Length: 90
Image 1 (cartoon, rainbow, N blue to C red):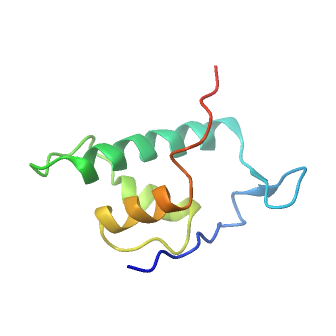
Image 2 (image 1 turned 45 degrees about the horizontal axis):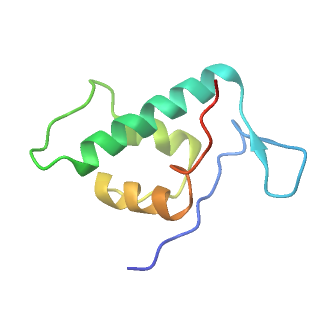
């Protein structure tokens, strides 16, 4: 399976200090991290249980415009692009 490169929604993201660095504000950061946690829980469980009432895939599509339609495909794309390797903030 060919993994696509993530396309950022530049209405939300801002260019950071270095090349390839993008920033978002605190509330969008919390919303993005919550959706990433929910997607991981929903895509990796075997029973089809929902993690929360919101559509995590719909929220993530607001930040990344070219995610696949399925939760497993979106999760694989985000893992391949390093979104789950980000350092945790204290």
